[in-house]
Length: 522
Ligand SMILES: CC(=O)SCCNC(=O)CCNC(=O)[C@H](O)C(C)(C)COP(=O)(O)OP(=O)(O)OC[C@H]1O[C@@H](n2cnc3c(N)ncnc32)[C@H](O)[C@@H]1OP(=O)(O)O
Ligand SMILES: CC(C)C(=O)C(=O)O
Image (cartoon, rainbow, N blue to C red):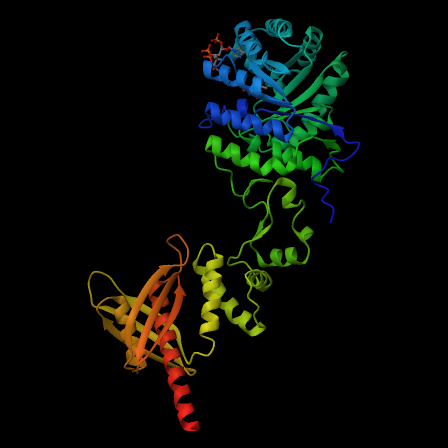
């Protein structure tokens, strides 16, 4: 199958990807990155094909200034942007930081909505218009590439927004961003907003329009794509969607939406999509912000299937449940996770991957025990399956089988075991006390299956890590000069012990039966 999700389509409209992980992303509480971490993120963004890296807010602190300046120095391909209010001090700091870049940008912003102008800035619309023009003019004194943002643009009165846009383009703004600062807009509204502004502003063709969406209502990606449909050609976004409050539009979702649904969004981002998973991991580790398991594209479950019906479909044809290949986003392969919702198809497939060819009968038997195990354990690991296979092979011909076991244990002895065995198809029950729960279990076995064998070894290992790990018990019994060893596995150590002991007993009895048969034949 040709992987159509890895490469840009010929003839698709190019959309500029403006990554603000290091600025808006770092603004969310707890996501602060060290200087070195910022360098690692910036290098990766540059390598993966991001067009603009917003490296920080130079006027915020000396540390931020140094980070922006160093990213400006080291970045090879991308434009490096620094954010600034309209205040001249901010513009100058940003200008000083990005002047080290091959291609530097000053990104200046000011609020244009009535609520922000009145209460936050305490300025009239005319003052805001003047501040915008002055800021863009000052920024153009440093660089040719100047972006102006109308903060809270989606709650701005449309006539005023158009006046501002026209004025800043005239003053030299090359990119005009209309952010949905508080994540309030909807796709239809945002698409229409860009269409209106572009139609009404006479010099709108002199600037690139940009979207910048927040995820307060979970619509950041949908709104960003709608803005592009409305004529915007720059998308501001962050890796893993980190950012103020509920975050920004997630870069990986935007890139893959345009790749996978190129029929609806015929735009290309130029991003090397196979690096998306790595970028997600680097940012998650730098910020210590874990990525939610079910996060689109980069969550650890994005290419994992646990339910039997889906796993069966995936084994028959991967397109039944995956709309992009794992490779297209840098994931090695799909994982079929075995759990209580899995079916026989996935169970058999995993056994075969592990090198076990089993008959239909064996599969049926192991599958029943696998389901029992999966009901009790959160994750069934390959080691658990190995233990199931070992048990199945070792105990295929056992005459004595464990039916049920209940043990009363604790500080107030004696410990008591109630054991039910299936011996040649007959159910027998016994209760026995012991000096500890294991002793009680073994005493109950001795009562039901009288024997002289001596317990020479009793050992317990955990099959995997974690408190719900299976116990793997080994037991060695010796009788008549012969010693046999058997293992039993179960999340309950006492059950595993009973299985191991019975396994050894079965082996001893089978050996004795063979010897008697041989003597009779002689
Ligand atoms: C929507 C966004 O993401 S905007 C970016 C948000 N990012 C940040 O704020 C991170 C960096 N910020 C900082 O380090 C600090 O806030 C600084 C250095 C910028 C300013 O610090 P301070 O001078 O102490 O001001 P403070 O943060 O308390 O208040 C902001 C001031 O800027 C004014 N202001 C806010 N936006 C703008 C703007 N775009 N242009 C001009 N002035 C603005 C406010 O009205 C307020 O002015 P006031 O003190 O006269 O009331
Ligand atoms: C500075 C601007 C672009 C911003 O971050 C916002 O409006 O959310």
